[in-house]
Image 1 (cartoon, helix red, strand yellow):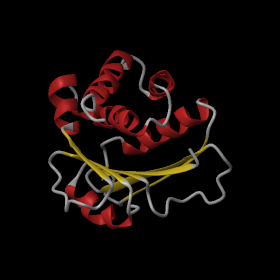
Image 2 (tube, rainbow, N blue to C red; image 1 turned 30 degrees about the vertical axis):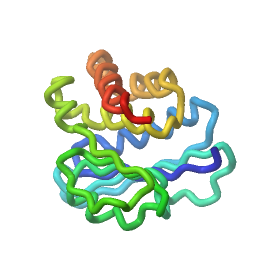
Image 3 (tube, rainbow, N blue to C red; image 1 turned 45 degrees about the horizontal axis):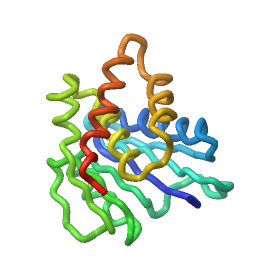
Length: 178
């Protein structure tokens, strides 16, 4: 496995910071090493935000993502701001509302993450969990059980069923991806 650097980006309020924390926790619970950091604009909700996670089966010597192997963008602004930093052979995952330049990564996936959260799961606020289900299906960072346990450990009490469904729907988005 080595080391995998991930950058989750979008706008404040989309829950990507929590998404990064959940991914790091899942990796640690799965026996891997992980570090997580985040930043967001002064606007908080609506401003640009990003969460970064490094997952490795060896020691992590530098805690910041330099060139992400995996890049998620839920907004056009986030895509435009961060896409140039993705590794040449990186994986780019965007919400279908984001226009991509094409040919940036070795694999690009345009998925209806925001619409799935809003229309299929029933709550726009679970887009981060839908995204985690999709990312883990594509990149296979941890087992599905370990990720689900980390999600359920971090979501507000009473929202477990909703978040479990969001994770499942995120996985379903990737069923036909090899």
